[in-house]
Image (cartoon, rainbow, N blue to C red; front, top):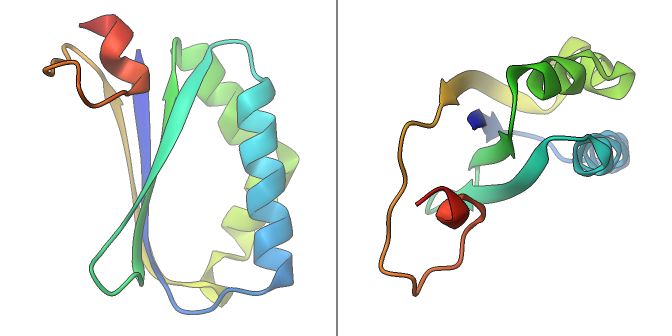
Amino acid sequence: MFQCSFMFTRIHHDDEFQTLDDAIAEYARSLEGFLGSDTWFGSDSSRVNGVYFFETMEAVRKFAAFPQHREAKDKYARWYGGYHVVISEVQATYGDGNFPHVTASAD
C-alpha cells in the first residue's frame, strides 16, 4: 500500500480550484487500486494535508498523470503559499478498532 500526502498552505480558494480539486478526487476514486483518502487541517485551517491511499505504485503514477492533476500542479501558485509531497510505502498500521480507517484492513 502507498500513501501520498499532499501538504500545502492555502492562500486562496476559488471556483477553478474547487473544480480541479473535485475532478482530481473523482478520478482518484475511479482508479483500480484506490483505497481511500483523508484530509487533515491545521488549527487555523490554512495548512492542509490531503492523503490518498493506493494499492500499487502503478496506481500512484496513473493518478499523477491525470491531466487535471497536471493542470493543478502548473497553477498551484495561485492557491498555495507552498507545498510538499510525500509518497510512502506503508509497512504497518495498527489501532484499537475504534477509529475506522481505510488502512485498518492492513492491520
